Image 1 (cartoon, rainbow, N blue to C red):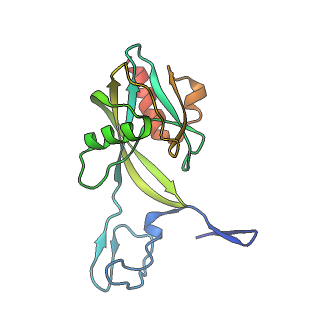
Image 2: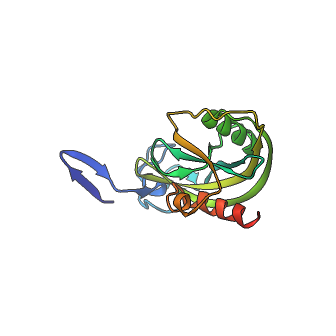
Length: 186
């Protein structure tokens, strides 16, 4: 682990989630093999595999084939392009999460969705990197709906045929791959 000290503040360098587990969350025993997968507590036997969490991304299209691209208002990827989406909450299906995330972030209700692809991703939040599996869906919405961004999440949107201007400034590589795959199928 490397620590950067600037103007009296301590900032950790990004680290994989398995390196953040220095103590067993079940019994508090100090872990002697930090970074090992799975985490196995020598004291109580607790085991954690650090499997990826699920996230969804919506490739929301209009009837003319243009794609909804959104620019993120916060980290990770603040100011970069992405797709509406987010993490799947406990107790909901991937499809429920897709509908919820698109509605929360854009105010749009999904009329139809079709599975497109999945891709592994890494989510760096406050310098802890968590493995994620992103599931992407092509979505259509009713044409009469207007985009109303959640300004805490997103700062701008465009209905576009994505170009290198967008693809070269994506918050997540998996989003770019999904868009490129979607473009190749058109």
